[in-house]
Length: 390
Ligand SMILES: [Zn+2]
Image (cartoon, rainbow, N blue to C red):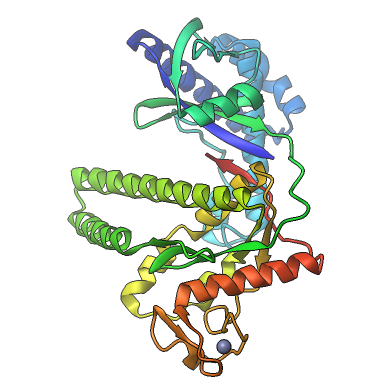
């Protein structure tokens, strides 16, 4: 399993200036290489290197590794562009967007990420410093920081290249970690069903509910503030809107981390697997009044689902995905399905056997039951391939 860990660098002012100069030089060199690639149609690293390597080394004073990475980055950008053009992301061939995207060379922003390999970057995990190549020589003892759990993963499993990026004036290294796939618990004692929703962000079949009322209210007020700022259309208003968007994303991520951690820990402790609904279902199935619709479409369900999936994998807890059809209308006791079983948002009352329960818990019991059925039938779980920023 691949995980991506982001650590924040804490460079001294002089070090930050060197990093900035390096990133700018690498991206300028890559932009120039991209124009050469465009003119000569040399889009493979080996070919493009012949045309550009020597000049990049001299003109931008880049080391051998940095020059090679700038060239490879350029080639990767063209490969991505080609794939996007083919997949119709820029419209049909011949359309204005398509022509505009394919008719000019790729350009890198001065702050675009630059890959670093082990020869250009070394980690001292104990001291929490890195030694990093720059165009002004190698910087030693550049301090970094991050969350404890993530730093442990980094120290134990980092492998391959890392990206140097600058976001909002702050410096980060994004490192890839390869974690060996743990053997999953092959004999789970039943399943913990997790129902993802809006009113309750997550409800488990153990009766735990993560209420969304306060979060949703805050999200709604943030959204109003953002649209107000957007209407203003001044530079400072735009800056503030961006700041709020970042804040909201961080808050959501934090909540999703907490919910997923609790659910997985509970499943692990009790030797169970976890059952989730296939995520596409949540959006398609919900029929909502208008004010709730924005809430639904902007709530990061996919993120919560993927957090649960990767934490489960690390804890050796099997995850299965179940068909979400009628989980909210089915009675978890007698399995009678009827829309009238759920007369109100929060209330479930079976018309046949009289079973009464909170609607989300009833749904999570159904999900747990379906998860068990999927498991005993030996059906393949459709867990997506994981690459995540933790
Ligand atoms: Zn019933």
